[in-house]
Image (cartoon, rainbow, N blue to C red):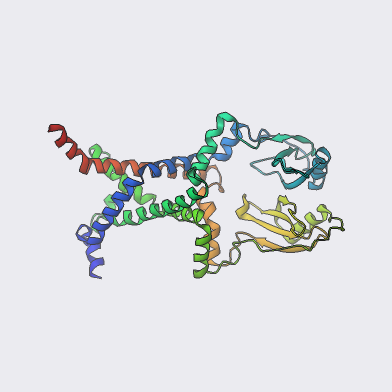
Length: 390
């Protein structure tokens, strides 16, 4: 209690603050380049869908249609008629961000990679093949994505990213200890006094930006740890709060090779009846003899897989084998695991949130560079002057 009382009134005299300062200083200097790079790449990737569209990956993004939408069964007949030697892997329904049907195909009998086919949402006519890769002059976007996710090192880089995200969380924890100026002056640490000299403005900017972005940057640190070490994090969370609905159920169908597959239209009607208030998002066809057919239904007013229900059907007799309502969380652990993707990417709530997330992502380079300038002003500048005189 005495330590806490002393920290509240005169934090500079407490050993915890001095220790936190050293950890924060040297960890920040070591991670400067990483923080600059990860912040800049993250801000760019917030607008990845728009950039990929501009690059030509979705030439039908702005197609205008009138009339009733084509039934998925009619779309599948059109696709199978145009590509009789290919197997349909999935079919995505039109959405606000992509107004056409998109079918993913794979050749029967030999592997040549998946192709994506765009289908008109009203006439069910084949519009053409959608590019799987960015044009050569847009390859930088793939590099940005790979760096942000794996540091260009594959699985090892993803795990290293998780460790570095933990270091970012450590910077935040030590930073909030250093930030506290005492009960009598804490409001001054919330703003930047532009009337002072540039060194003081730099200090105020680092301190104020660190405080106002503490919450979101901490969330990014936690989600970065989760993405790098998801299995370990899930097991740890499960010990504290059991994970109930955050993982898909293990559902298998009884293989019947001699039977005919059930009618897709009947299964879609049953999915709409069992999951009212939703609309078709995707159909994932069985990848093996015992795999179920999966129908993903988007909840009203939402977008993305984090707000969709998955219904599993027996492909032979059309029975519904189970429903997985992802995002309808039943425990604190489910909420934690489910929230990592929406909170990290910020792409689920419209353009305004995207702009906000991109701006907040730039706080990492800002904090890193202002921190280096503070170190120069307090330590290196004097040494440089003495060396220059000598």
